[in-house]
Image (cartoon, rainbow, N blue to C red):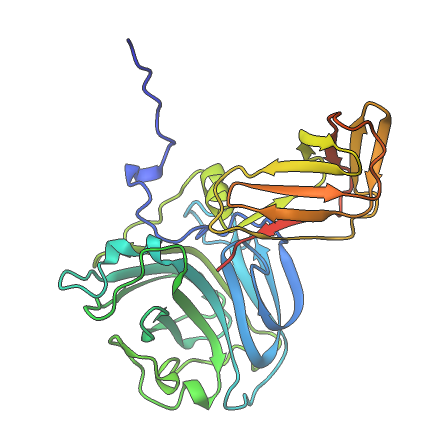
Length: 358
């Protein structure tokens, strides 16, 4: 019997998935493309997978931007804009751009073994402040950390930074779907995280050694900081950024977040004696059983039935798995038990969000 060979998706340079970062080109933004007035830590305020982590240091707007390095194939970056200045941070204040890893995505580094590999970190950055900036890797499984400095040479100019972080023969990453490591690009910090000696080798976490020398991007409301082309790969060489097709990056992001909006159809609905039940099958397996949230649902979801159209004002959740969700409505169901009812989101502002973020 003959077999049909399915072509792999196009990947530039034919070096497939060497980048352990998801959405490093900042193109996927399912939740929103901009968040303003941020004074507390926020998941994916501008693009998927990248967070703002903050405690007391200024007020920020974080947004997906079209300001990108020229000629490098990027269409988006992530912008952090300081909108309320804090020129004199309290000792415990800090702000940073954060990315979180599952352990199963880190196994190629062989951390905690005699054959441990280095971390090759590269990214494009544009900062309104020149001088020393800090990047940290933080091993959550073993409470270990390493930091390195990079220098912004010219204000408001895109620069490509390449950094090689050492291998670590102490402490393995758990091979599971839990939170194992995070990367910080520091935006500023008080003395609790800057008063020691920068840990450029892996060591137990000591806060005072994490961000020594970091400039304060919160000291003026004219300050902003952009990043794109983030790549973290195994070894001691930083290669060119791996441009993946958009739909591939989007599906990888949907492991952590799935957002349904206006025009989305759900065909798996049906009526029983007292309620409408809708089965939603996710396009990819999520990291863990997600939590579900939505904006104001009033008349946002309509159901086509044998008796006409129902508009749902409330939704309940019968429990979700990594593969699917089952939503129900007990108050607005009016069709015949046993009949199917296809649901449709009919509101440009409505979002139904499933999250299994780390």
